[in-house]
Image (cartoon, rainbow, N blue to C red; front, top):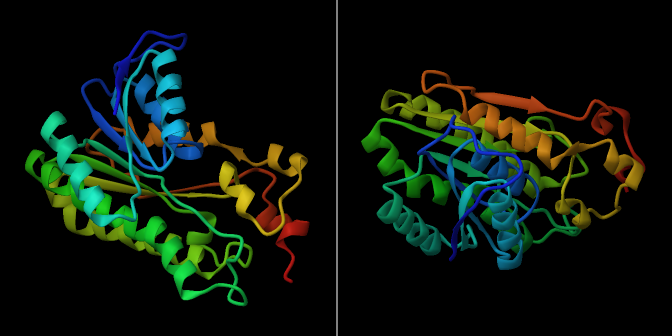
Length: 266
C-alpha cells in the first residue's frame, strides 16, 4: 500500500473535497478512469484490483493530475479479504463516501456450449458477489453518517439480452441492476443512494477475452474509458438530495443495433 499526492497538469477542484472514494477494478479501464476523475474533483481515492502494476500506474496518473490516492491489491471475489480491506479503510478514513463497483470480467469460453459451472462461478463471483461484498463493507459507516453513494457498473447486457456476452455475464450484470434498485428501496431513508450505469461497448482490456476480437476501426468508435470516468464523476458530484437511479450510455455507432462480425451466432 502506498499513499501518494502531488500537483499535476489538470489541477484539483473542490467539488468532492474531503470525500473518500473506493473504486474496484481500478487497475485499468473504467475503474481507472473513474478514479482519476474523482481524484481531480477533490476526493481521496482508494483504488483496488488484482494487478499491483496496474494499480501503481493508476496512482501515478492521479498523482500527476494533482490528486491523492492509495492502492490496495484485492480480489473482490475473496469475501474475507474484502471485509478486511473495508475495515481497514473505515479505521483509517472513517468510512467510504463513494463506492464504485467496477471490477468485472468475462471469459472466452462464455456460451452454454463451452461454459462450465466453475467458469460461471468465476464470472459471477467477481461481477456480482464482489459488488455485494464491497457494499456490505461500506454500508455500516454510510448508515451511521446518513450519507453515501454506491455506483455499480453494469452493462448493455444487464438490460437487454445479448448473445455475444454469454449467460454468466448477462445474469451477473442484470442482477447488478436489481441490487441497485434494492439499495435505493431500503437505504434511501438512511441518506444512501445508488446508481446503476449500463455502458454499451467500451474500449477496455476486457475486449481481449472475446472469442473474436473487434477490429481497431470498431474499437475506435466505441465508448472510451474516459467517457465512463466523466459519467461516474457526474453522478458523484450531484448533491445528496439527488439520486440518479440509472444511466444507459452507448456509442453513437452502436454495434448492438448495427451488428458486427464478432457478434454473429456460431
